[in-house]
Image (cartoon, rainbow, N blue to C red; front, side):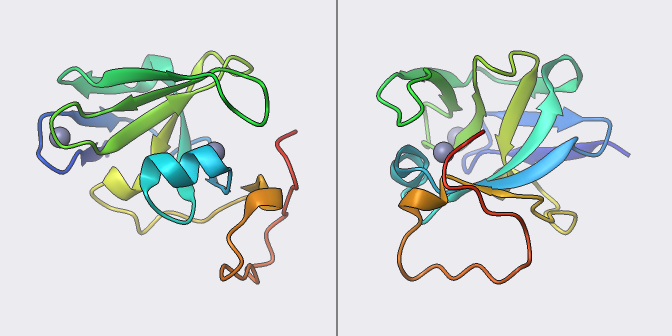
Length: 134
Ligand SMILES: [Zn+2]
Ligand SMILES: [Zn+2]
């Protein structure tokens, strides 16, 4: 059964047929800023399998700790982040899982950029934590 999601206003919707290849949490400062929250929760989905309806706006985020330019796609009407893409994994889209209709399958496999994790966030889920992104 396809997994589905949409932005807050519904102008951008998406679906993909298979369970995500991975789930992870990013604690980088730029994800915090974009989400307006403590971290971003991500699901890696092959771009070839991701069907998007509507046209997300693209922000090319070049001021990153990794030095890579992260493509951040979001709804231009309501501002919901939809997905990110990074040059190191050009075939993957990293969906912001808060926009998924059913988040019950979310189980993080790693935390990245723990070096900028917010102080109040305690990670005791037994999942590997990386100071940066490998
Ligand atoms: Zn929207
Ligand atoms: Zn991040």
